[in-house]
Length: 147
Image 1: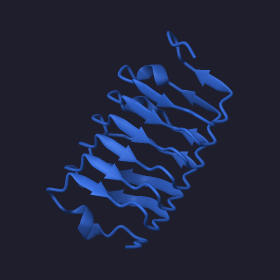
Image 2 (image 1 turned 30 degrees about the horizontal axis):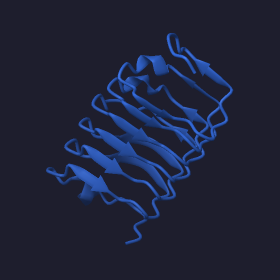
Image 3 (image 1 turned 90 degrees about the vertical axis):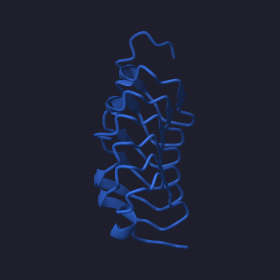
Image 4 (image 1 turned 90 degrees about the horizontal axis):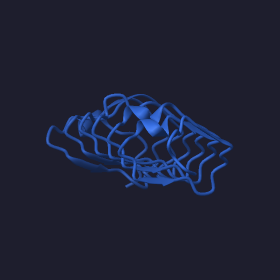
Protein backbone atom coordinates (compact mmCIF):
# COMPACT_ATOMS: atom_id res chain seq x y z
CA UNK A 1 0.00 0.00 0.00
CA UNK A 2 1.07 3.56 -0.59
CA UNK A 3 -1.22 5.61 1.61
CA UNK A 4 -0.93 9.38 1.61
CA UNK A 5 -3.55 10.16 4.27
CA UNK A 6 -4.51 8.59 7.57
CA UNK A 7 -8.26 8.14 7.41
CA UNK A 8 -10.36 8.90 10.49
CA UNK A 9 -12.10 5.49 10.40
CA UNK A 10 -8.80 3.74 11.06
CA UNK A 11 -8.20 5.91 14.10
CA UNK A 12 -11.59 5.06 15.63
CA UNK A 13 -10.87 1.36 16.09
CA UNK A 14 -11.49 1.02 19.82
CA UNK A 15 -9.50 -2.19 20.45
CA UNK A 16 -6.45 -1.35 18.35
CA UNK A 17 -3.23 -1.74 20.40
CA UNK A 18 -0.54 -1.82 17.69
CA UNK A 19 -0.54 0.35 14.59
CA UNK A 20 2.24 0.14 12.03
CA UNK A 21 1.94 2.39 8.98
CA UNK A 22 5.48 2.26 7.64
CA UNK A 23 6.61 2.80 4.04
CA UNK A 24 3.73 5.01 3.00
CA UNK A 25 3.67 8.59 1.78
CA UNK A 26 2.18 10.56 4.66
CA UNK A 27 3.39 14.15 4.18
CA UNK A 28 2.29 15.41 7.61
CA UNK A 29 0.65 14.54 10.90
CA UNK A 30 -1.63 17.48 11.49
CA UNK A 31 -4.92 17.60 13.38
CA UNK A 32 -4.95 13.88 14.12
CA UNK A 33 -6.41 12.18 17.16
CA UNK A 34 -5.11 8.64 17.71
CA UNK A 35 -7.38 6.37 19.77
CA UNK A 36 -6.24 5.84 23.34
CA UNK A 37 -5.82 2.04 23.37
CA UNK A 38 -2.85 2.27 20.96
CA UNK A 39 0.37 1.31 22.77
CA UNK A 40 2.68 0.84 19.77
CA UNK A 41 2.68 3.37 16.91
CA UNK A 42 5.16 3.12 14.04
CA UNK A 43 5.04 5.77 11.32
CA UNK A 44 8.63 5.28 10.16
CA UNK A 45 9.76 5.48 6.55
CA UNK A 46 7.18 7.98 5.35
CA UNK A 47 7.74 11.55 4.14
CA UNK A 48 6.33 13.32 7.22
CA UNK A 49 7.52 16.92 7.37
CA UNK A 50 5.40 18.27 10.20
CA UNK A 51 3.41 17.17 13.23
CA UNK A 52 1.10 19.81 14.61
CA UNK A 53 -1.94 19.48 16.80
CA UNK A 54 -1.49 15.72 17.13
CA UNK A 55 -3.13 13.94 20.01
CA UNK A 56 -1.02 10.87 20.62
CA UNK A 57 -2.64 8.02 22.60
CA UNK A 58 -2.33 8.35 26.36
CA UNK A 59 -1.45 4.63 26.62
CA UNK A 60 1.35 4.93 24.07
CA UNK A 61 4.50 3.01 25.08
CA UNK A 62 6.47 3.07 21.80
CA UNK A 63 6.48 5.83 19.18
CA UNK A 64 8.58 5.45 16.04
CA UNK A 65 8.90 8.30 13.57
CA UNK A 66 12.27 7.33 12.12
CA UNK A 67 13.30 8.00 8.51
CA UNK A 68 10.95 10.89 7.85
CA UNK A 69 11.56 14.57 7.12
CA UNK A 70 10.62 16.14 10.43
CA UNK A 71 12.39 19.41 11.30
CA UNK A 72 10.76 20.11 14.67
CA UNK A 73 9.30 17.63 17.10
CA UNK A 74 6.51 18.93 19.33
CA UNK A 75 5.55 17.94 22.84
CA UNK A 76 4.19 14.54 23.73
CA UNK A 77 1.58 15.92 26.10
CA UNK A 78 -0.36 13.17 27.81
CA UNK A 79 2.04 10.36 26.85
CA UNK A 80 2.95 9.55 30.44
CA UNK A 81 3.59 5.88 29.68
CA UNK A 82 5.98 6.42 26.76
CA UNK A 83 9.08 4.21 27.15
CA UNK A 84 10.62 4.37 23.66
CA UNK A 85 10.84 7.32 21.28
CA UNK A 86 12.61 6.76 17.96
CA UNK A 87 13.21 9.89 15.86
CA UNK A 88 16.34 8.69 14.07
CA UNK A 89 17.21 9.93 10.61
CA UNK A 90 15.05 13.03 10.28
CA UNK A 91 16.09 16.68 9.91
CA UNK A 92 15.14 17.67 13.45
CA UNK A 93 16.89 20.77 14.69
CA UNK A 94 14.66 21.34 17.72
CA UNK A 95 12.86 19.11 20.16
CA UNK A 96 10.44 20.77 22.51
CA UNK A 97 11.02 19.60 26.07
CA UNK A 98 11.35 15.80 26.17
CA UNK A 99 11.02 15.89 29.95
CA UNK A 100 7.25 15.40 29.77
CA UNK A 101 7.76 11.67 29.17
CA UNK A 102 9.09 10.70 32.61
CA UNK A 103 9.02 6.93 31.93
CA UNK A 104 11.22 7.16 28.82
CA UNK A 105 13.97 4.53 28.81
CA UNK A 106 15.12 4.73 25.20
CA UNK A 107 15.59 7.89 23.13
CA UNK A 108 16.92 7.66 19.57
CA UNK A 109 17.93 11.00 18.08
CA UNK A 110 20.80 9.94 15.85
CA UNK A 111 21.22 11.27 12.32
CA UNK A 112 19.41 14.56 12.94
CA UNK A 113 20.43 18.22 12.91
CA UNK A 114 20.15 18.81 16.66
CA UNK A 115 22.63 21.28 18.09
CA UNK A 116 21.56 21.07 21.72
CA UNK A 117 19.17 19.22 23.92
CA UNK A 118 17.74 20.30 27.22
CA UNK A 119 16.31 18.65 30.32
CA UNK A 120 17.52 15.10 29.77
CA UNK A 121 18.11 14.88 33.50
CA UNK A 122 14.34 15.17 33.92
CA UNK A 123 14.09 11.63 32.51
CA UNK A 124 14.94 9.50 35.56
CA UNK A 125 14.42 6.17 33.76
CA UNK A 126 16.49 6.93 30.65
CA UNK A 127 18.76 3.93 29.98
CA UNK A 128 19.56 4.31 26.27
CA UNK A 129 20.39 7.52 24.43
CA UNK A 130 21.49 7.50 20.79
CA UNK A 131 23.02 10.68 19.37
CA UNK A 132 25.43 9.34 16.73
CA UNK A 133 26.26 11.72 13.87
CA UNK A 134 24.48 14.68 15.41
CA UNK A 135 25.70 18.26 15.37
CA UNK A 136 25.64 18.84 19.12
CA UNK A 137 27.43 21.84 20.53
CA UNK A 138 25.75 21.99 23.94
CA UNK A 139 24.04 19.84 26.51
CA UNK A 140 22.04 21.86 29.02
CA UNK A 141 20.80 20.87 32.46
CA UNK A 142 22.65 17.57 32.70
CA UNK A 143 23.69 17.69 36.32
CA UNK A 144 25.07 14.39 37.52
CA UNK A 145 25.73 12.95 34.06
CA UNK A 146 29.11 12.35 32.49
CA UNK A 147 29.34 12.74 28.72
